[in-house]
Amino acid sequence: MDFLLLAAIARQPLHGYGVVEAIREATDGELALAEGTVYPALYRLERAGLLTSSWTTVAGRRRRVYRLTRRGRTRLERERAEWSAFAGAVHAVTA
Amino acid sequence: MIDSYLADLRLALRSRFLLRRRLLAEVEDHLRESAEELRRSGLAADDAEREAVARFGSPKAIATEAVRAAWPRSLVPAALLLLGSLLLFVFPLYGIPENTLPPAPWDTRPGYLTWKLYASLAAYGVSLGAVLLAAGAAWRGWARVALGAFATSIAALGVSAALGITLAVQWAQAVPGSGTTFALVLPATALTLILATAAAAMAALHTPAR
Image (cartoon, rainbow over all chains, first blue to last red; front, side, top):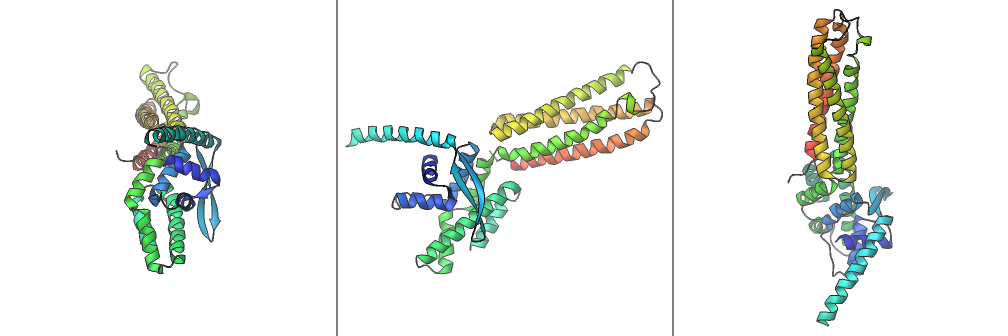
């Protein structure tokens, strides 16, 4: 899940609902996250220094927007490389 | 429906006031936006809210996960409150040296007062160092170090206060005219201990259950 969140936020800064929607749209609804679990995961990633966040106000509602940090981008690149290697290995066996 | 969900979430986070404020604002924004999207897709208002809430998950489970995710940084306010109580305690400790009190009837301070003074100061130093370590460790996310240092700081403050109060009472008995100064020392020490107890309670409330 952390990998998905980092990848979604890497495209553009997003709030929690935006993250859920971005993943749902990118996967044509194949990956529908349990929405409430996104927030504890975002807090954990922020605490780990992979994300940063700030408040904005939209339509009179406070909204927390998350951005990737430099450390988050490095982690995302590493996770991408590991995932590609893993997916390639599985494909080599199952194709 | 959304209001009722938020009330349940607020109740589940009742003792986590810092986390509660942030999470409630984020969840409300999420649920209202989700319900608006569902209404645009054709659902009736009540059904849209019901569906948005159902997709979000149990408030108790979300609260539990959020508390775990926010830990141990949520210990930082408790550490800062404890630090504040320690700085207040500087007053009674500085109240003890002879230059702030009436002339003492001795050339060399009696041993039974001297060891208590230095032991109290040493315990105070340990407590101060430990609380700074606790705050730093909590901020960095080192949960076990933060909790251990916090507990050490509380224990050392208790030792320092116990020795300090004993010292104050014995000094007041030994040095005529010093009672007025110590009349200020004791309430300040009591306030320190009350604040330290509040800090400990705050830390306990913010520590997730195992």
